Length: 83
Image (tube, rainbow, N blue to C red; front, side, top):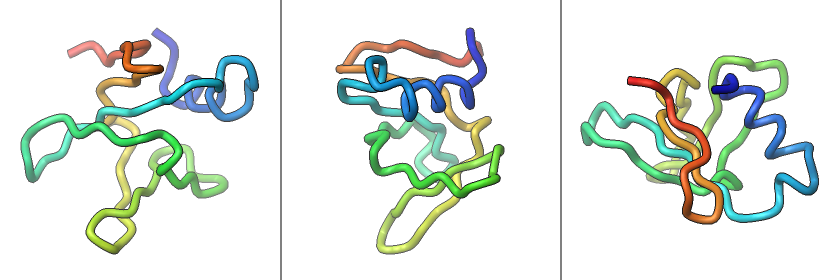
């Protein structure tokens, strides 16, 4: 399994691989389940190698990379963190 940062770079910068609909599944501690969101809704802060941001309920929320559990491409799982 490749590191999640490497997969994100490939999705963002490899034009051929980046085609398609990507979603990530992250562990939500409040709902105690995995939440799936569209990759295009993720905001990457330049120089930050530990987390990303998403807009939830009108405010930006920071999600650490270690909470990402799954990545999907066109509905099929392509990456999964070992449990």
